[in-house]
Length: 256
Ligand code: CUA
Image (cartoon, rainbow, N blue to C red; front, top):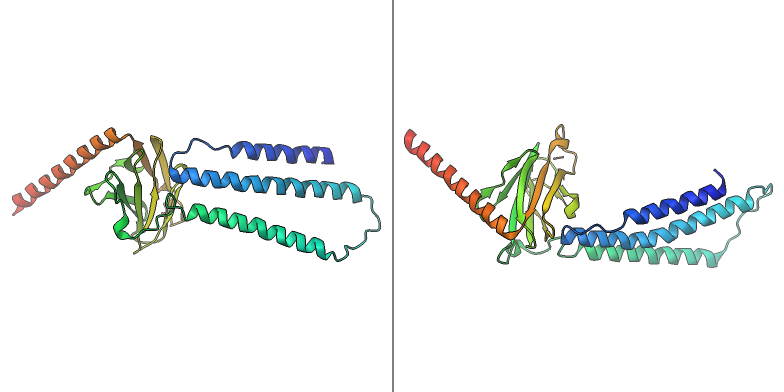
């Protein structure tokens, strides 16, 4: 590949990268923050990539016919410069990433009694097993119904959503890429996610930790609906649950 073509290819790939980094409408507060961080890091990575490519191309062109190359001499000033520059860049990346990961909109840092503290907040417990998910709403005492592709969690738009992630057996992973949600599901341990869904729609969830034969079939989804629709859904589910309970009581009474 000649140098011109190489330079063109580098520029083009940089442009494509910038294009893909264009923030899509944020579907949740978590996705929003993570998207912003991605852009920030890209703005740092892009000039560095270009600088390195340009120096590389220059070196290739300038010295390609050099039959007697001379070794590089020690250059303390240059060494100090690139060490300090790298340290500054890494520090920025670290601080920016920590700022997002420690943000309450991404990682829930509160205690057990701070889960869903406000009126309208929703708390869902996601329990993974080999191979599927049991999604429950402990406060409403309902279980999320099964859809075509695993259980469907229905939540209201614009309200705080808390998800307690745990596992019955091995380590699984709760992952909803579009909502910026990811948490390992650990046996005998509950870890919490917190976010606010900001756009109605259906979001596909996956198991993100290899857990055996049917790992790839551990689907679930999150359905974000408006508040009125959610209230209605909640009423229906509660009615169904009490019907089931009544049925069970009847059966129990009949056998007694
Ligand atoms: Cu569960 Cu992979």
